[in-house]
Image (tube, rainbow, N blue to C red):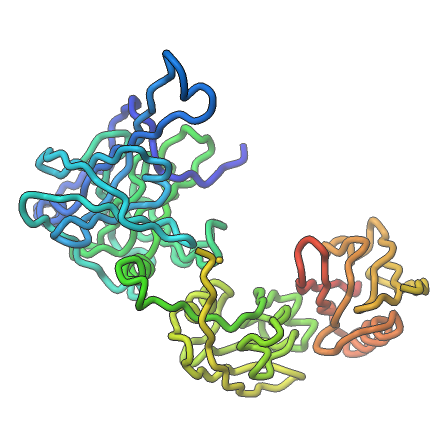
Length: 431
């Protein structure tokens, strides 16, 4: 059965027993101290469409989630999906005080939102940890409102870091086996010192209605803090960009480019007039280091660039033509969204037919069992570049394939342009 990642908001009216209760005195003291900063959130979503109008129209349905206090004056953080479409927001404190909330702000590229309430007195606020210092197997506690059972505590460990659940281009989720269920969305994940290391956001479950199977995911605290500051001070928040397309260097691409190991990210293209284009970065460059950051994956580099103030000069260590070079790039500000004559030329191995096109070499035919088909090439793809050399004729492709075979390479790296997807690097097997 295919599993799925599920956002943790739950319709009111379901109940179950929560597992993983805290047992030791030390744990009890920690939880007692942090519970007041955790809230339950109930939102009303009005029905839409024809059924929402006229006599006898159905009333809205309430959904439940969690949150935690960022500012004692009444600013609460939660997931954006918890309050999405809310016509009414109710926030319940740990002492059962009920407060009406209003949406203060929400992020576009990360599942985060702020709710404002007006308490009669100061609220207890959480303390944040440096989530970059979190390690696999660290003990953690999750507190939230699973299935409407507010103030529920579960315990576990950090199972993994930097998980990509295909939610955003910046995914960096903390995975935990602490019991996370529907309704935990927006609640905090604490370390054993009572500091927030993440915001519980999603669970992996075989069925949409299933509960925890020990695969919960939390947005890291450092990402939460960064976005929260941006939401509070939008006039001071200017995200950086180098305006290029990048993808992970796979073992196959590394082999094709004669690299000793798969590391860094490969540039798929640059925007004319953009920061990368201006400083001389070209398609095929492998970015190994961004300032002091060793580039391990695409998402980490994207986060680092976004957090760099526009106008900052950054040294990039780049692998080009079998040797490293250093390029100085000036980060630009990310704009706000609110984000031919055909000549048949068969080649061996990849199982394709190629033709000269106006902007590269066009794939006109593919063998079903060829390595090009296995790599994801489709008819109509335009080969723009192989390795770090532009190609304009099928003879260029054949020459580079032959050269790769002579060097006993197992793959060739090819930059293709596709109408629906733009530019993308593919590694084509030669055997």
